[in-house]
Each structure stands twice: as C-alpha cells, then as structure tokens.
Length: 211
Image (tube, rainbow, N blue to C red; front, side, top):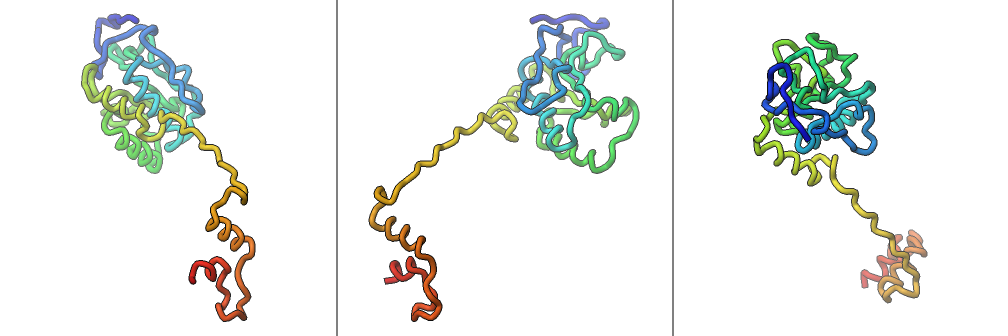
C-alpha cells in the first residue's frame, strides 16, 4: 500500500491522503453491478461508499452506467478521486456543473444521505454542482468514519448483514404428537360443525376445549 503527491498535493479536498491504486479495492456486494470500474480506498471509504452505491441502486435508481472511483489523474488538482474517497454515479445522465436531476430523485437521494448519518457528501451542494458525485464527508482520522463503517458491517440498513441460516422445518407425524396435539389435529381435519346443532356451528375443536 502506498501514498503519493498529486499535482503538488498530499491531501485531497476532503482531507484524505492521496493514494496509489494499490491502496484501493473494488466493491464486492452481491447483485451490485457496474462498480468494478470504481476502485475505492480500503477500509472505511470502501465500506461506506460501497454501501452507498448499493443503497442508491436499490432505492434511488438502478445504476446503468459504469461508476467512477479512484483515478490516477484528474482535471481538479485536489480531487477526492485521487485519494479514492469519491464516486461518480450515472455520470452520463448527470453532467458536471448542471442541474439535471428531477425533484423526486433528489428527494430519494436526500433520504439516503440522512440514513447515512452525515458520512456522505453530495456534490450537488457545491456552488458548481456535480450531481453525479458523492464523497466521504469526514476527514481521514475522524473516528466517525470507522464507527459508521462498523455500524454498516454489523447490519445497519441490511447491506452487509450476514445471511441468516435457514432453519429446517421439522416434519412431525401423528404418532409423535401429544394427546392434546392429536385431538387438535383430528379437530382440524373434521372442520366446522353443522349450523343446525345446538352449538350453532362450533368447530369440534371449540366443543372439545370449551368443556
């Protein structure tokens, strides 16, 4: 793993060290596609931004174009992409410095940002809007990064939660039932009584257990 100086900068705009590709990894979440083009800084950035991509794909809109992440070069000298702490989502649909996202989609994004508890910043909120762009909001070393990443890994939002083992259904046979269970089994097979009976249609189960 290694770090670097990019365009005279050792730290990106959001306060993370500029890094090389070997400091990054790819998001690997089942059923999340088009993210292998977006290396992200290992650790909390990978966990948080990976979860954001999944949440976006499931709750904002399906990701249908390759996501951009870490880059070796950039037109902006202190870009967070140079540090592997930013992603560009649906770039062809949301070009830089233009407001193109409709209100309904914006509302979905805002809902997600609230669920991510301030860990993700949206480029739409810059004076020069960048609606495709999402980055880590907290600087490197801020304890909130790892705390929120740990919360996600523990199952928050259900993105990284381990799959729950399926409990096999245990088949039982009449000869294995207790006397009460056997009576209830027989009552269930017989069904409701005749409405003309004094019990006015009580089931056999009701007759048995009302005594």
